[in-house]
Image (cartoon, rainbow, N blue to C red; front, side, top):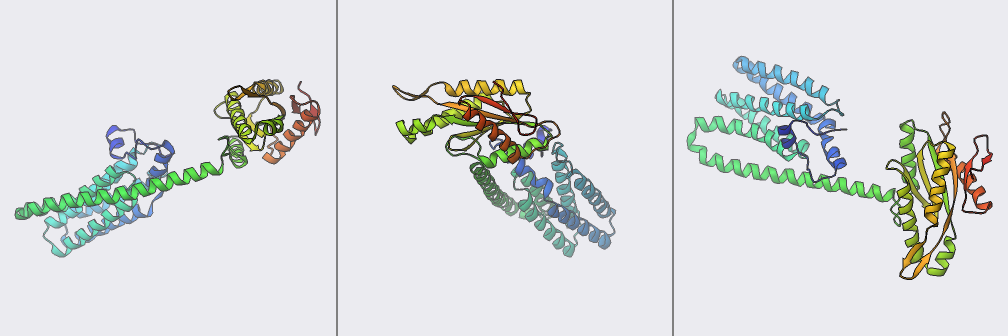
Length: 373
């Protein structure tokens, strides 16, 4: 969702930050799709100012601006629903709206209607405040809109009163620097908040020892596979002999061994499959649907990988085994995580009681257990 613009110029103007992770960029870019109230308020403001200017002057350009802004508002609102389409049109129409605001101010100031000029300038300042508050995530885009609006007044005024040009230049530089600083402050605060939220979420779904997902992370992965209408296979693993390693070599060696087990398990699964440390020396693997033979083949590969020696330190090795229980979700079953875990746990219990170091598949008929060995 919320992809960047495809056009090179718009991509540069609307850049969120190429150094940021893509999810963070998309999160920031989403504000241009979801923040609708300031967009509507800005357009209504411009339409109102142009309409009043038309009533006071009778100049058709103001009526044309009001009508154009109304049509543009409808287009912009329709574009906001296209969250999977490139965002170039969102930013292009935003720049066009700023141009309409600038043209309105320029024509009002040129008309020498002092009262209307004050209203138009107040409208422009309000628009600048809204742009800073809404569009700070893309500083170049926001500054481009701000400069369109600010320079429209200053250009017309400088032509009429060239003696003020040095002062206007100084004010423009100060205005740009001030607004850039405010935009960067807002953007930095938003990025820090998003990164902090992402890190907090990562910690909430991650086992701190192994870096694998925890039970909560597994639940999210399970729910995600359900949304994808994917049948699932769950492997329930319990290490054999881990307590003896802890007792003989200490908890530090046990922690090192658990981390290595996690690494070996990740190597056996694909990028879209999940390895979870449930706690202690228990692990869960969530994969897509596998037929019994394929599930058993993966189980035997896991047993072989876990059984290889672990080099704890120089001259010290440890060995553990693993028992594996497997439960498959049959097409149309739509099991919950607790249900498929219960089946896998029953298969694991059978593997432990039948001699350990075995892989047993939960039977497809009722609660029967099918031995895959």
